[in-house]
Image (tube, rainbow, N blue to C red; front, top):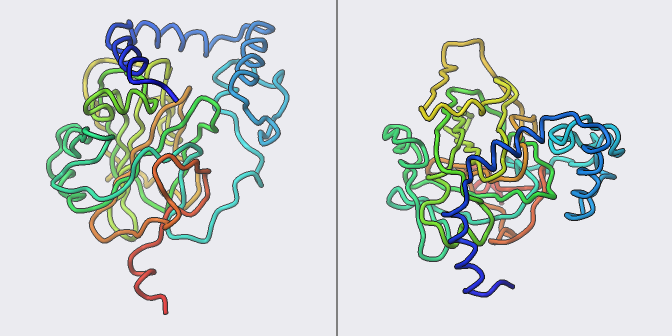
Length: 293
């Protein structure tokens, strides 16, 4: 367990590091196809973080031409069965926090909150749709599977790229950087579901070279410094089933989910810090819970 002094130094380094330059350099390397050098880097990464390649659709390191190909690797079709639940976990990772949205505020860590308004790039009408609702923040470590899947079926309404900082999103930084998830670069994906709106927010971080969605492809780069809004309300519908892939990270990061009031009851086994896998039960709709005998 890290000490308070070590945590303080780690946070101070986050402010001092040239995070954008490091991220750009990492992105260039991750996209490059460097043959044996790429394969050596992947092998070192697998050994360093204990990545379970037996779950991968292509378990051989030589199958991956670039580090990005490895990092966004697909899993075997049977690797993540879907639970019989109204909402399933969309990622492999760990539960950072989850609970109620109260007064427009989301709990980040002891002593720290951030607002739904800030997270959603100042969109007050959208933030109001989640007032009194629920949130879940899920952290993906470097060793995790990095594709993101739908917790329930939904129809895409809007996607918003929000420029921002590139702080690390590991637990130490979450405890020490105020408003972390509403300060970092992010991609807000708004879906309409049979139980109301669902926001899936992909949060960038230091060394996260890019974020991508299945309907758009790579969203960043470019990093223009401007909010970019993509409206899908009048486009050919993008409808995704529960468990379908919706996006991916290239290197680790965090997903924040938002639900409206009365949408769900969380899995009673959930707790902060618990490791989770895509497809496990996240929760049930309140209608399902109240209808049980």
